[in-house]
Amino acid sequence: MKNKSTTRVVGAETSDNSPTFCRGDDNASSASETKPLSGDASLQSDSLRGNHGLQAGATHTASLPREARLPINRCNLPAVVLGGLTYQRHPSPLLIDGVAELHADLFRRLNAAPAAALADVFRDYLTVHFRLERPEEIGFTGLKKSRAKANYVRMIRGWSFDSDSREAAVLKGWVESRFGLMPRYHKQPLRDPSSDAYRRYMEMRSHGLYGTNALESQFDLVYAFCQLELALRHPGVSHVMLYRGINRMDEHEVLAKGEDGRHVILLNNLNSFTCSRERACEFGDYIVAVDVPLTKIFFYCGLLPGVLQGEDEFLVIGGVVDVTLSTM
Image 1 (cartoon, rainbow, N blue to C red):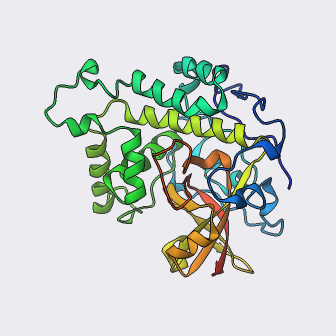
Image 2: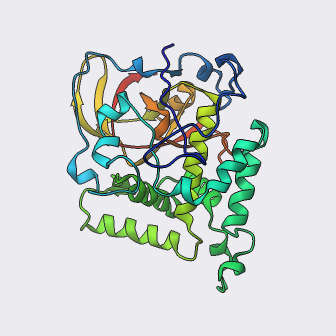
């Protein structure tokens, strides 16, 4: 297993210009002491690895198409870089603007907490900082209490039920805003920002954000916390092999085809994968295997107990990727 010490997280001491580890590996002195990302034991062996999973012979250098990206974003790398094939092979930390500076207290608390308490510390901070249990303190006066409860937990759960839901539109909109990767599918293909399909997606996104308290800022912290946990549990690891079941390859935007089932495809800007090949088989006749950079993982099953359950699911930020297609 070839590891690279490239996975870093946003911490109290970081800024966009000087990324450092939020915590060292004091809780895991060796790889054998790390915890798996989920209940799938395969993550302790072949799934987690360095960036050797992509064949050296795959020389296609597909970049992110212009129509799939915004000219600006809110992180330290432009969309054309973080969404390209080169980034999949050679990832570097993705730092969302202002997170470390505005939430330094959160990262100080996380640095001081034992590993077993990190999730509770994170939940408590978001509950208090965003007044999730007392919305009237931040000016909520509406009659629809359900909108006041539309927080990061509800959005992620909504995605798990339906990746074309209103909650999913909000999450895809967050990826578009922070990373500059435009959604490619929501109920139907999104190819033209002036189309009716794109307008309906924007309506769902707007409805999902209405009456919430800095919902996209909550997602910023979820992503930062996910990166912190991944770095602590798997120090030095850069990629994880994930799987997705599909019925037809033409459901995806194929940019190049190679031998032995190799393809270069453009993913949606947010996608569901699983770390279990057996579980992926339940969702299609073909299995897409992708070496995913840990920096592209927004959330995974087990990160926050009770939020995302079942299917060993990972929420993965999209872009151009090299994949292997195989049958069961």
